[in-house]
Image (cartoon, rainbow, N blue to C red):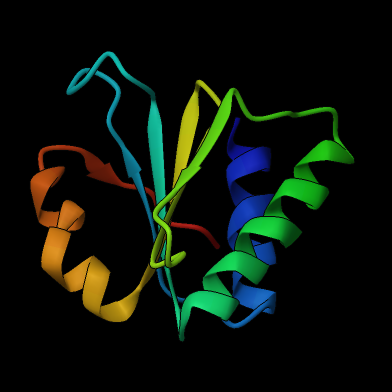
Length: 111
């Protein structure tokens, strides 16, 4: 799993996502094991991040259970079961503040 998390982190970082965080929510929630949270500059950037992560994970045989987004692409959620990717525009991330909402989880450091 950590190889996959590392791959996602590096893909997002390469595509200039900001404030990339990974939270281990095992034991905190039954909905998933990890949240990957990142910020895009604008709706075009968040959509682009979603597309590149999708393509990158397809290459290793991973398909999302579902992808949800609001009509403006200011928040995109990609559910892969064991992990869920949240891509936000900055103001949307600040508004929903899911980093704080899930602060009982453990922050995963990617090296």
